[in-house]
Image (cartoon, rainbow, N blue to C red; front, side, top):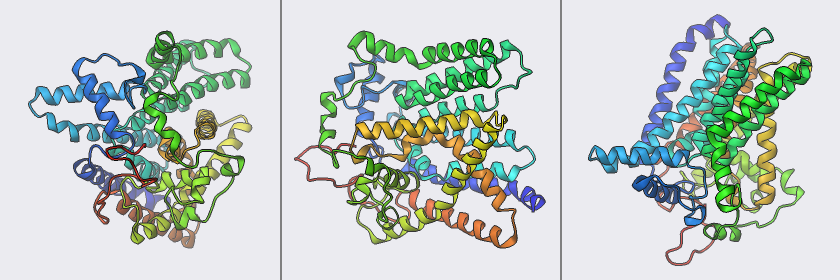
Length: 458
């Protein structure tokens, strides 16, 4: 079976990549550029930066409180298109640039799995496919948003950490690798605050290394290198905010107060343990049951269009496609969980050098996500796209288990293969804008009747 998979891995990889590129190109050309999470506000910020590149006051607009890396990149693209006499091309160029960043994440996933399992090219193909056809990843590749960028640099940091040298490496080499990981994590932070996951995971990785090998003198310089490089890469922006405005990250600015009207408005412990049937039968976040399920809503937004950004809000065909997608997606989701357990066992056994940063990042991201949603109890905040920094752990662990399942007996191989093929079809239909379902209404869910001229919070 291994030989058969190896012979087919090259053509399979080419076909998956071609399909992924076709979906992203279609979306860049057809998905309205002002749709998606905060897109219209992001364009306003990009336009203002393109005029002079001076950072505005955080309260100047909806998006101006966000770290500026993505907005500066997009403003440069805007200026380049204007210089070439094709300013309207920016509406396609920025989404295509985001798609390229997303392809970079998939490339890192493939490279990591090739390092972890060099004799298993089929597993590397699985890893790349899991990233390229993760609906949250496809959606953010099309939107004018910073999420894909923070995920790219977080993934680069995790790749550098997971492939760090062993105990025989020189101290100077370890410090340089730590600084590179810290710089990548800092750039992730400069794209969005969730990049802090990569910074904390990097520092924690070297701290745990020092404890495991009883070599704190070797760990301390690496931790210092991580933090110094992260400050240079992105932390300076938050220090600047503290010095100029008195806060590291603003909350409750006047531009954001409309968020406070969103349902449900409060959360309890039950919201973090419930997984209602509506997760599969009615996968849209305004369902009364999903509204009070943090992880159900998150699962729906990782594997489907729970916010109805791409798909019609009230369509029976969409609901059925969502049900099929989310049932089939249980396969890679369970595989990811089992892979994490395998990695944890390796770490506890004293091995798992690559597992340590992947598991630390996963735990930190999930805890941070839960904490944020506890303090911000609004359905619009529940976005699986906020967890895209975990693309590398997901690809590494899910591919490990799925590759094993594909080798264990013909019935299991057929069942897993058919399920993955079905999931691929469902994701293709659900993430290719206006391919199967025509979306006529405004992007998003109609959570209430808006006042004339008012934009919905997203």
